[in-house]
Image (cartoon, rainbow, N blue to C red; front, side):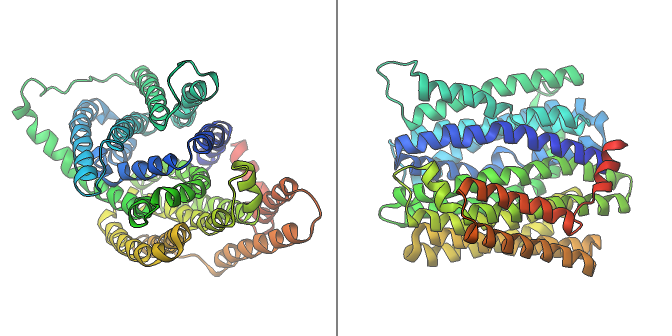
Length: 490
C-alpha cells in the first residue's frame, strides 16, 4: 500500500502542478487584476457557497468512497440511490443559500445572480467528486489522479478564451461571465467522468423506486442516516475555514476592498492546499481498505509516510512563500502590491502547515468513523474563529482575519492529532518528534540565511529555499533513499 500511495501521490502532484497553478495564477489572478474590487464580492460569495455544503453533499462523497473501497460490489446498489438523493439535496441547497444570502446577509439584485451561478457550479463540483469517489473506491487510483485536474484544464480553455480571445464582441468581460465559463468547463468534466466510470463498472442510473417514491423511502432514509455524520463534519470544516471572507466583506464599511486583499493572499494558500487535498483524497480509500483488513502496522506505516512528506512539504513551501512574499505579490499584482497585502500573505500562508496536518489525521479518523469526536472540536473551531474575527477584523482588517485563520487551524490540527493518539494509539516516539521539529528549524534557518545574505535574484533564492526543504527531508530521515527505491522497485 505504501508503494501504491507513493507512486500515485507523485503522479497527482505532477499533474496538479502542471495544470492547477496555470489556472490559479494565469486565469484567476488575471481576472482579479482586471476586475479589481468586484473580485472581493466574488470571493465573499464563493465563501458563502461553502456554508451550506452539508446539503449539497451531505457527506455522500466520503461515505461512498469509504464503503465502495471496502465493498465494491455495492456500487450498483448505492450509485442510483445516492445520485437521486444528491439531485434533490442540490435543489434544496441552492434555494436555501439564496434565501439566507437575501434575508440574513442582505444581498440583493447585484449579488444574487452571481451567487446563483456559483451555487450551480458548486453542485456540479460535488457531482464530479461523487463520480470520482466511485472511481477511486473501485481501486482505479491512477485514473482518478488523471481526472483530478480535468476541470481546471477545461477551465483554462473556457476562461482563457474569454480573457484573451474576446469571442463575444460588444459584451464586456465581467465576473459573471467568468463564473459562467467555469460552469461550461464543469459540465464537460462531469460528462467525461461519468462516461469513464460507466466503462469501469456496470450500474443503473435511475433508482428502482423512481416511479414509486414510497417504496424507496427505507433505502433513502438508510443512506441519509449513514451519510449524515460525514455531512456534519463537512459542514463544520467549511464553516470554520470559510467564514473569514464573508465576515470581512460584511463587518467593514469598505468590506469588498479588504475581502479582495484577503482573496489575493488566500489564492496562494489555496494553491498550496492542493497538496494536502490530494493526500487526503488518495489516503481515504487506502486507509479504509487497510482497516477492513485490520492491518495496524500498515496503517501506522502509511500514516507516518504521508505525514513526513506533507509536514516537510508544507513547512518548506510556507516558509519560501513567506520570505518571498513581497516579490511574489509584485510579480502577481504589478502596481497594486502593498505592505498591507504582503503582510496579510506572510501571516496567512502559515495556515498551510496545520491544514496539512488536519488533512492527514482527519482522513484517518474519517476512515475509522470517529466523526462525532471530530465534530465537537470543529464546533469549538467555529466559535474560536468567529470570536477572533469579531475582535481582530475591526482593528487589523484582512491581517486580523489571517491571524484568526492560522490560530483556528492550529487548534483544530492539535485536536486531530490528540484524537488519533486517543483512539488509534498513534504515539510518536522521541525520534519522530525530534525529526519533525528538526526539519522545521532547519528550513527556517536556511531560508533566513538564503533570503538575508545571498546577493542573487529572488527567484533563485526561492528555488534554493525549496531545495533546502528537499535536503532536509533526507538529512532528518523523513524519508530514506533506500525506502524510495524499495517502493519503486516492488
